[in-house]
Length: 210
Figure (cartoon, rainbow, N blue to C red):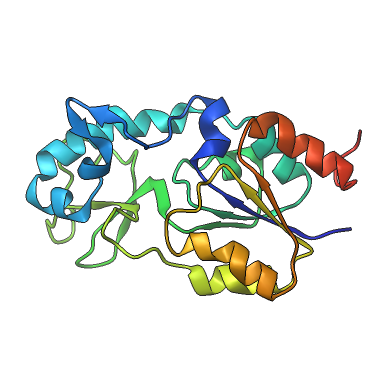
Protein backbone atom coordinates (compact mmCIF):
# COMPACT_ATOMS: atom_id res chain seq x y z
CA UNK A 1 0.00 0.00 0.00
CA UNK A 2 1.26 3.50 -0.85
CA UNK A 3 2.33 5.68 2.05
CA UNK A 4 0.73 9.11 1.65
CA UNK A 5 1.92 12.26 3.37
CA UNK A 6 -0.60 15.11 3.08
CA UNK A 7 0.35 18.76 3.51
CA UNK A 8 -2.87 20.64 4.23
CA UNK A 9 -3.80 24.31 4.42
CA UNK A 10 -6.92 26.34 5.11
CA UNK A 11 -8.57 25.33 1.83
CA UNK A 12 -9.26 21.80 3.04
CA UNK A 13 -11.52 23.15 5.79
CA UNK A 14 -13.62 25.51 3.67
CA UNK A 15 -16.25 22.80 3.16
CA UNK A 16 -16.46 22.54 6.95
CA UNK A 17 -17.56 26.18 7.07
CA UNK A 18 -14.24 27.68 8.12
CA UNK A 19 -12.84 30.74 6.32
CA UNK A 20 -9.37 31.22 4.96
CA UNK A 21 -7.62 34.22 6.51
CA UNK A 22 -6.94 36.00 3.24
CA UNK A 23 -8.19 39.56 3.45
CA UNK A 24 -10.75 38.85 6.19
CA UNK A 25 -11.48 41.59 8.72
CA UNK A 26 -13.00 41.59 12.20
CA UNK A 27 -14.51 44.79 13.57
CA UNK A 28 -12.68 46.73 10.89
CA UNK A 29 -9.24 45.27 11.56
CA UNK A 30 -7.47 42.86 9.19
CA UNK A 31 -7.35 39.40 10.75
CA UNK A 32 -3.71 39.11 9.76
CA UNK A 33 -2.96 42.12 11.96
CA UNK A 34 -4.93 40.72 14.89
CA UNK A 35 -2.99 37.46 14.72
CA UNK A 36 0.50 38.95 14.92
CA UNK A 37 2.68 38.44 17.98
CA UNK A 38 3.19 42.19 18.31
CA UNK A 39 -0.58 42.82 18.42
CA UNK A 40 -1.00 40.10 21.05
CA UNK A 41 1.70 41.71 23.21
CA UNK A 42 0.45 45.30 22.84
CA UNK A 43 -3.32 44.74 22.86
CA UNK A 44 -4.07 41.48 24.70
CA UNK A 45 -7.66 42.47 25.50
CA UNK A 46 -8.56 43.16 21.88
CA UNK A 47 -6.63 40.08 20.79
CA UNK A 48 -8.66 37.89 23.12
CA UNK A 49 -11.93 39.53 22.12
CA UNK A 50 -11.21 38.21 18.65
CA UNK A 51 -9.92 34.88 19.93
CA UNK A 52 -13.02 34.06 21.99
CA UNK A 53 -15.56 35.44 19.54
CA UNK A 54 -13.88 34.80 16.20
CA UNK A 55 -11.75 31.70 16.62
CA UNK A 56 -13.07 29.45 19.37
CA UNK A 57 -16.34 28.80 17.47
CA UNK A 58 -14.11 26.93 15.00
CA UNK A 59 -13.98 24.13 17.55
CA UNK A 60 -17.61 23.38 16.73
CA UNK A 61 -16.78 22.68 13.06
CA UNK A 62 -16.98 19.12 11.77
CA UNK A 63 -14.53 17.35 9.45
CA UNK A 64 -15.60 17.09 5.83
CA UNK A 65 -15.15 14.33 3.26
CA UNK A 66 -11.52 15.28 2.57
CA UNK A 67 -10.50 14.99 6.23
CA UNK A 68 -12.40 11.72 6.58
CA UNK A 69 -10.90 10.23 3.43
CA UNK A 70 -7.35 11.02 4.54
CA UNK A 71 -8.03 9.41 7.91
CA UNK A 72 -9.54 6.32 6.31
CA UNK A 73 -6.55 6.01 3.98
CA UNK A 74 -4.14 6.21 6.92
CA UNK A 75 -2.35 9.25 5.52
CA UNK A 76 0.28 11.02 7.59
CA UNK A 77 -0.80 14.64 8.02
CA UNK A 78 1.40 17.74 8.04
CA UNK A 79 -0.98 20.63 8.54
CA UNK A 80 -0.78 24.40 8.67
CA UNK A 81 -4.27 24.46 10.16
CA UNK A 82 -5.13 25.08 13.80
CA UNK A 83 -8.69 23.74 13.69
CA UNK A 84 -8.06 20.14 14.85
CA UNK A 85 -10.30 18.68 12.15
CA UNK A 86 -7.81 16.00 11.12
CA UNK A 87 -7.83 14.57 14.63
CA UNK A 88 -11.62 14.87 14.74
CA UNK A 89 -11.76 12.83 11.53
CA UNK A 90 -9.69 10.08 13.11
CA UNK A 91 -6.21 10.74 11.72
CA UNK A 92 -3.63 9.27 14.09
CA UNK A 93 -0.39 10.78 12.78
CA UNK A 94 -0.78 14.58 12.66
CA UNK A 95 1.99 17.18 12.76
CA UNK A 96 0.56 20.64 13.49
CA UNK A 97 3.12 23.13 12.15
CA UNK A 98 1.15 26.12 13.44
CA UNK A 99 -0.15 24.69 16.71
CA UNK A 100 -3.81 24.34 17.66
CA UNK A 101 -6.81 26.07 19.20
CA UNK A 102 -7.29 23.39 21.85
CA UNK A 103 -4.68 24.77 24.20
CA UNK A 104 -3.34 27.91 25.83
CA UNK A 105 0.30 28.10 26.92
CA UNK A 106 2.20 30.07 29.52
CA UNK A 107 5.36 31.21 27.79
CA UNK A 108 6.99 31.85 31.18
CA UNK A 109 6.62 28.41 32.77
CA UNK A 110 5.57 26.30 29.77
CA UNK A 111 2.34 25.03 31.33
CA UNK A 112 -0.41 24.06 28.89
CA UNK A 113 -4.10 24.55 29.63
CA UNK A 114 -7.13 23.33 27.73
CA UNK A 115 -8.81 26.31 26.09
CA UNK A 116 -12.07 25.12 27.67
CA UNK A 117 -10.56 25.02 31.18
CA UNK A 118 -12.89 27.16 33.31
CA UNK A 119 -9.91 28.72 35.08
CA UNK A 120 -8.74 30.38 31.88
CA UNK A 121 -11.64 30.30 29.42
CA UNK A 122 -12.68 33.96 29.51
CA UNK A 123 -11.32 37.46 29.06
CA UNK A 124 -7.54 37.80 29.05
CA UNK A 125 -6.49 34.49 30.63
CA UNK A 126 -3.62 34.37 33.12
CA UNK A 127 -1.55 31.41 34.22
CA UNK A 128 -2.78 30.22 37.66
CA UNK A 129 0.85 29.40 38.52
CA UNK A 130 2.64 32.68 37.83
CA UNK A 131 -0.10 35.08 36.67
CA UNK A 132 1.48 35.66 33.26
CA UNK A 133 -0.86 36.25 30.30
CA UNK A 134 -1.47 32.99 28.48
CA UNK A 135 -1.02 32.73 24.73
CA UNK A 136 -3.01 30.47 22.43
CA UNK A 137 -0.83 27.49 21.55
CA UNK A 138 -0.68 28.61 17.93
CA UNK A 139 2.07 30.11 15.83
CA UNK A 140 1.15 33.75 15.32
CA UNK A 141 2.34 35.85 12.42
CA UNK A 142 5.89 37.07 13.22
CA UNK A 143 6.63 33.79 15.02
CA UNK A 144 8.60 30.87 13.58
CA UNK A 145 6.67 27.64 12.91
CA UNK A 146 8.07 24.52 14.52
CA UNK A 147 8.35 20.91 13.41
CA UNK A 148 9.85 21.45 9.95
CA UNK A 149 12.68 18.97 10.56
CA UNK A 150 10.09 16.40 11.56
CA UNK A 151 8.14 17.16 8.39
CA UNK A 152 11.22 16.43 6.28
CA UNK A 153 11.70 13.13 8.12
CA UNK A 154 8.09 12.18 7.40
CA UNK A 155 8.61 12.90 3.71
CA UNK A 156 11.67 10.69 3.47
CA UNK A 157 9.66 7.48 3.55
CA UNK A 158 6.65 8.64 1.54
CA UNK A 159 5.36 7.34 -1.77
CA UNK A 160 3.38 10.54 -2.44
CA UNK A 161 3.15 14.08 -1.11
CA UNK A 162 -0.45 15.22 -1.45
CA UNK A 163 -0.73 19.03 -1.14
CA UNK A 164 -4.25 20.18 -0.32
CA UNK A 165 -5.79 23.62 0.07
CA UNK A 166 -2.67 25.71 0.46
CA UNK A 167 -1.23 28.53 -1.64
CA UNK A 168 2.29 27.52 -0.55
CA UNK A 169 3.10 31.11 0.37
CA UNK A 170 3.94 30.61 4.05
CA UNK A 171 7.41 29.45 5.05
CA UNK A 172 8.63 26.90 5.86
CA UNK A 173 5.76 24.69 4.67
CA UNK A 174 6.03 26.18 1.18
CA UNK A 175 9.39 24.44 0.77
CA UNK A 176 8.07 20.92 1.38
CA UNK A 177 7.14 20.16 -2.26
CA UNK A 178 10.69 21.04 -3.33
CA UNK A 179 12.14 18.80 -0.63
CA UNK A 180 9.80 16.05 -1.81
CA UNK A 181 11.07 16.37 -5.38
CA UNK A 182 14.67 16.20 -4.14
CA UNK A 183 13.73 12.98 -2.36
CA UNK A 184 12.07 11.77 -5.59
CA UNK A 185 8.69 11.72 -3.93
CA UNK A 186 5.96 12.58 -6.47
CA UNK A 187 3.75 15.56 -5.61
CA UNK A 188 0.01 15.86 -6.25
CA UNK A 189 -1.64 19.26 -5.68
CA UNK A 190 -5.37 19.66 -5.02
CA UNK A 191 -6.57 23.18 -4.28
CA UNK A 192 -10.19 23.27 -5.43
CA UNK A 193 -13.16 21.24 -4.16
CA UNK A 194 -10.96 19.20 -1.83
CA UNK A 195 -13.97 17.45 -0.32
CA UNK A 196 -14.61 15.92 -3.77
CA UNK A 197 -11.16 15.65 -5.29
CA UNK A 198 -9.27 14.17 -2.33
CA UNK A 199 -11.53 11.10 -1.96
CA UNK A 200 -11.53 10.69 -5.74
CA UNK A 201 -7.73 10.74 -5.97
CA UNK A 202 -7.35 8.34 -3.05
CA UNK A 203 -9.75 5.93 -4.75
CA UNK A 204 -7.68 6.18 -7.93
CA UNK A 205 -4.64 5.18 -5.86
CA UNK A 206 -6.68 2.26 -4.48
CA UNK A 207 -6.35 3.60 -0.97
CA UNK A 208 -10.12 3.83 -0.59
CA UNK A 209 -12.84 1.46 -1.78
CA UNK A 210 -14.75 2.55 -4.89
